[in-house]
Length: 151
Ligand code: HEC
Image 1 (cartoon, rainbow, N blue to C red):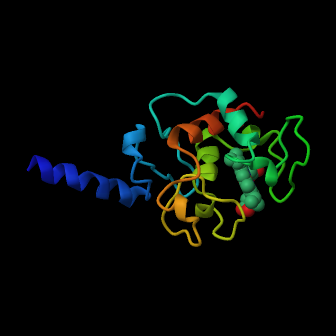
Image 2 (cartoon, protein in one colour; image 1 turned 180 degrees about the vertical axis):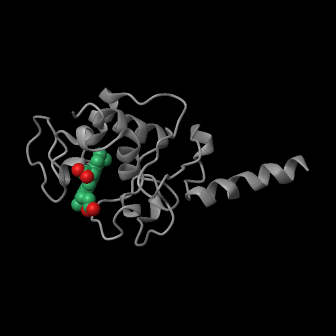
């Protein structure tokens, strides 16, 4: 009985939104999407850190947000494929920001923006990235904390 309920749990989480297999190991909670527009509940128990989130956002090997967005940072070569993120926290709530980083395709299936915390429904995934999200649950929270500073 105990074993059965332990096995049933990941399937129940997956029906909320498919999350990386190691998400529980990262201390991640189920990802609950509300009204197809927001994820109000943080993915982790430990709060995001805006300083770490800023570093992830500008790091070309991690968030690489600057490839498509402008941010209030001195780095050169900022992108304009996506909207300028200066002031984005005045436009979107915390939950709306979190959903757009986790999986913007929930809002716009055609978007050029990658889903940073989703592993199902992807194609042409680099072999070493199969089953792994681009960012961890904690990194998502760090990026959301940073975006919330962009008033
Ligand atoms: C390959 C290009 C690309 C990358 C990389 C990218 N985005 Fe986006 N992003 C977009 C586009 C395009 C949109 C506009 C939404 C749409 O397409 O429907 C968008 C929209 C957004 C929005 C909603 C903005 C608004 O005003 O509605 C947020 C927030 C956002 N991105 C954050 C990020 C963050 C944070 C990163 C890095 C972790 C990132 N994006 C990386 C292309 C990108």
